[in-house]
Amino acid sequence: MVNGGTVNTWICINFSRSVQDSVAGGFCSELAHMCHISGMAFNPQSVLPPISARPEQVERALKMRYHEAIQKLGQGRELDLLIVILPDNNGSLYGDLKRICETDLGLVSQCCLTKHVFKMSKQYLANVALKINVKVGGRNTVLVDALSRRIPLVSDRPTIIFGADVTHPHPGEDSSPSIAAVVASQDWPEITKYAGLVCAQAHRQELIQDLYKTWQDPARGTVSGGMIKELLISFRRATGQKPQRIVFYRDGVSEGQFYQVLLYELDAIRKACASLEPNYQPPVTFVVVQKRHHTRLFANSHNDPRSVDRSGNILPGTVVDSKICHPTEFDFYLCSHAGIQGTSRPAHYHVLWDENKFTADGLQLLTNNLCYTYARCTRSVSIVPPAYYAHLAAFRARFYMEPETSDSGSMTSGTAAGRGSMAGGGVARSTRGPGAGAAVRPLPALKENVKRVMFYC
Image 1 (cartoon, rainbow, N blue to C red):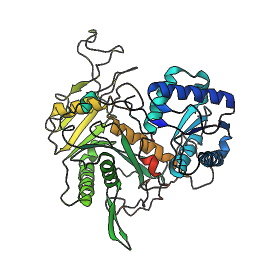
Image 2: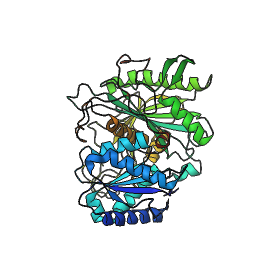
Image 3: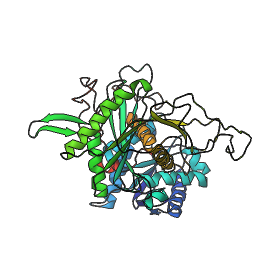
């Protein structure tokens, strides 16, 4: 860990019938010790002793224990973390718990399955410590070149890096909205902390409708807002500077939608910038990330150990930007990760717009380097982390949608019709773009302290 977070106040709730409170207490002590030796300031003593609760009473148990802890802490003090032990087969419990913690109580939580509580392996505890650290505002990894300000076209001027994704409901769910998520870096020059916002929008709508929006307020007249504007303000609040460059990684777009998405979302980014300050138009680089394709890369000399890794895949950091790429457009394949099993699938990056005038090598190097900063593991990952985080945030927001009936849906099958909008307030009805007229029930708003950290990890 580069910067260890601080956890002074925490509690544990156990929803597993097979885990006794004494076992839960021992597990929490081991986890607290691992967080401490990893570099966090972690108080080994919980505010209240671990308590067991029934899964069907999750809301009652969470709120009751939370208020007991707040009452014991006294005026003005808050809980930093909730540790939860879940049954191995927990159905909708995980989703209900995250929704209550993040939209109602304003509390970040870390869930652990029963099988891991009994095993208590050091590797598992170390991985959980990584997740807890970023949830409480710490940093796990920072690029050396970022600290020494040697990343071309990023380190010289304040730069914000966005990631965006839209997840759609499962086939057959005709009424569920699509969920859009946007994350943005909140530190510079390190570029490792990402705040996230989510919104729901019309069913199967690929364009992110709430990047920028306007509405009429009876007192203030025309008011502008949206996810881009809120994240730009958040960046300025965190760093003390407004971004002078924007790099936007967009996931989940098929080639047939490239220019429709570019025109709509680039326009939204420009309008969001202009709404903050007249003539404020930082240069934008818009990159689409694709993972679902059928291209595989193999080394010419497959038996040469210098050309392949242990699993027989091409080496991480391999770039292909000619021959199999578009003859005139700016695109490249990047295998940024070391394959563990099977054949590595490289990510395909399409640069649709580049006002920052990146060289091919410069953008490839930046993208590859960012893949080593993913918070949840100590390896490089296959797609650039901002796009990865946006996918995680969008997946998390699907848990916030409550079924219209009283029965909770299963965690794996998704929920029925849900609430849509920016989880930060507002209504999910944009005044611009396709599907604007479709009314979507608003998602419950994320609490402010949750929005500021990487709650989706």
